Image (cartoon, rainbow, N blue to C red; front, side):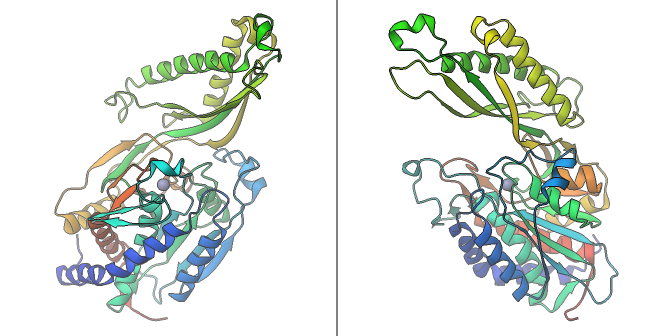
Length: 429
Ligand SMILES: [Zn+2]
């Protein structure tokens, strides 16, 4: 890495000096409790934070028609967020370096039953090195790291010598349409960094994800005549069995797939939600399950969707009840392909050197079997899309937490990355 060692030391010291403020900033973000559809106030807060630091501000609305027309557009269900994307742009005096997009999402998954949390999920308590809270790790810590990595340069009188676009998106946990919207709006850069909680590693490969529901309808009767009525909940269980067989056949197709064949079970089907029936003594007339399944990079979402539909309809034909009332499959969220990060890019080399300097260890990469917004930039911008962020535990679970020592290390690595990738110039316009 060409970065001057004295400058690197000044940057690291600057991250250290700003870290108490950074921790308070993460806590403020967690307190917003920004579940899907409720991200308006946090986005206003982010807007003010960026504007007050001198960024040129833009708000971008979701263009439903443009999203629907794109092959990677997530399906727009009624609970789709209408919160805007917030973007802050730094423009240098002399554009001599390479441009960069720093992106993070503000939406968080629902906290689930509160009694399973040790602390209220939106009260970001710190115990030892861990900050607890829904979204603390995924990804308010990374969201703050974008701002504070840049702030570390400001504090020592420097700014990136290239355009840096800071993007705060929504819909990462359900469709990926926030990140897609930044692409559709036309933002581009020479590289993209998204600091998701990846245990200080770089994501090398990532699965695509589809969301779908299956709805079964039956004939309601009193339980004493149960033999005459079809139980929609029982029937939904049989459909789940057929979907589990599809999951196993997809896992069997890992052979020959470089980043996947070493994994025990790279493709996971999650039946994440079930609802149905109306009364304990009535045979349920309806049941709906909500599912999420992963797909390998290189598999089109539409092809995977056709296979899911065929699995359900083929199974239904073999089932006496379902043959008469075929289940209905609907796609209602993620409709995304996976990606592989090409090895050997200059951006990766710069991040690896920055990581080494900040942590003393070599940068490792791995396969992440879950949806990531980096896919938008890898697949459609076709630029190096780096997903790299802090150590965490229990994301999407109870007592989600992020390591603050790790947040400091990755913020340092990010600040060093920005300084080297974009170059630096004296602060000012
Ligand atoms: Zn995330």
